[in-house]
Image (cartoon, rainbow, N blue to C red; front, side):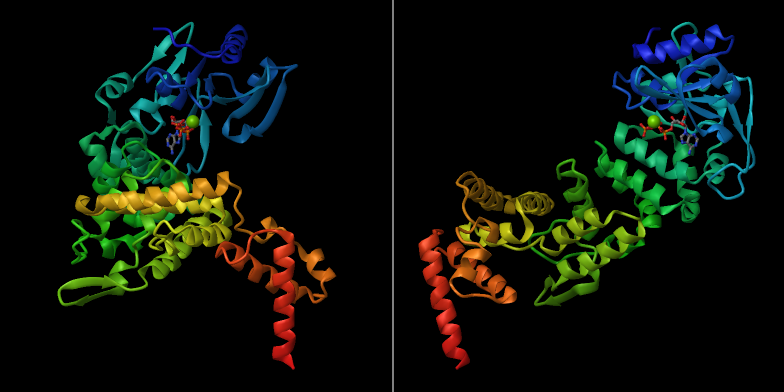
Length: 449
Ligand code: ATP
Ligand code: MG
């Protein structure tokens, strides 16, 4: 079997071999190559000890960051390659990291410490594929299976629980039954995992091709990291718009949304407060202000999972405004363009579309209205219509010239003029705007006297 690998990688492998060591590409890159995908990066595993690797790459740019754990980064023709010594992990006492690592000269031992069979293969052009644990077969069968005893492997490092679920989503693979059973019984260990790591896995899971199935099959695992979901499961909505309970609706909206992190996060969290805000009148369920309350919950969750301020702000806004209506009105849309900006307003429409696709299909005709809104945005942008103060034909200096000197008043006046332009009560030209500005100042003065 021959796999296509970049020239720099080939060079690094043959260099290590020429120095008398074994060397292979390993892990995710081998898996991806066998799947016919382009790997993001190439990891190299070798029998050389770190100092031996460094000696072998004398004259190259070498970065010594991970030497303690056996990793040396060599930059070959501009490509940084992580070269790690064959390793056995020591005891695990914190359910996450080995207390110590030991180097070994055995490839098999290095592969045995890896998480799943599909991630435990190595390859080199000279020695071919090394597959001690049936990784190739599991790739064919589309199966995630632990290397070794699943209970033990998840106890050693609970991050593997989330990795298993994430790979199931990204690759669209099923789970070998004892692996699936073990990750469910050991899911409580996820409390030991750093939230940053949880976030990384959650993001990949949400963007996976099989996100819907995985959210349904492994809801309990997700609830370990976002327990706020628990009340939504099975919560009936008593609404003619809805065929599903709150959680099932949520999953539908996630799987029908575009592969975009902010939108997927917004869908996952958009209705969390429904159980908290539920009331029933004449047999019909209501969830007054669930949008704002869900946004508040999302804020806490995203902060807890260490999302950046920017992602948090965007997702929280998308949730807070997820049911505003524009009715194809250009005026309304310009106001929202001014408030959120073009990119975020378009995202909000994606959220609304996904939300609708999670409801009873007999209401999907409302998609037309969403299309109209999008159409309006396109027109407003294409015609460079005014929806921000910066686009007005007058600025602060112009207003100063007509006698408006106070900074705060200038701001108010510009907002007032923008309102007139958006509402089409005044054209966006200098003369007309200055005359309205004058009028405003005169009226204000009279009111003061
Ligand atoms: P991705 O495509 O997300 O990079 P990957 O499989 O390459 O997936 P990495 O985190 O880059 O994941 O890890 C590289 C390799 O290291 C894995 O393929 C696996 O062999 C091993 N590995 C990573 N994390 C663990 C872990 N928690 N336990 C055991 N082995 C692991
Ligand atoms: Mg990788």
